[in-house]
Length: 338
Image (cartoon, rainbow, N blue to C red; front, side, top):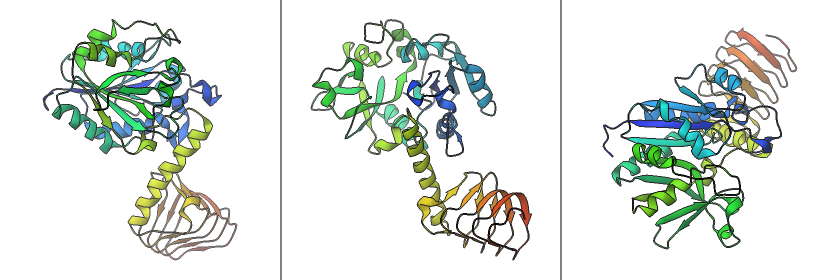
């Protein structure tokens, strides 16, 4: 694949997410201060795609409203007929049938931009027809298994519900992210049947078709398995939030901010914090707050859309909203206003 050929992104966001036990569409559940599909769109933005296409279905009006600030093309999957059918719904939005389509799910908020770029680069350099992202899990339950040779050649992907007992022991799983030659993808998706336990069009069957035609099918093995795991339950939602907040806190500490017990501290992505600020246990800084150098935020303080000048001291368990304090300000413990 030439560097000059277009890259299209197709993000699957039409599902209900029944394991969430919720009336809300799964991709709209918030992780680290934003719907999880927003994190996926932010991760793909640095790839500079020719077009980002989001496939919507369940609660489509709510999902569409949530995506109003993003530059995306929305396509509708009227019926939930499987991942392959969802991708087929995106075909009318593809302008050119050369180049590559990268397919992702809207429920993978931990995926990193640099990982996706590495995968695209490998796909191009190896001149692959199809590249599948895989990873290794200690417990691969709920994920499709990678069936491959000892040399690493992929033969097929078997979904959990269709896997036999031996296949279920395989720990290498399908991460649900693909780079596929555009023309091959759409010409062959139409040939995939529904002979499986769900009676759906499985996108994974495209691998079997490529193998039958002796086309190049490669793996992109992601060593950071946590980054590719989808959010399918409330427990996984909380785990994803903790991971994203941990990444944010590590970045903040690397920039010169002191955190006492960082695992208890939450700072929103839009908040700005200068160096030499100290955050004590249980602090939450949310909204678009701005904390200037030398400030000290005591334990349990909650600050939302708050601007602090330099060397401010916020008493423990204070709750401040939508206000501004000048330099050297001191608030008493349990304060409720600036």
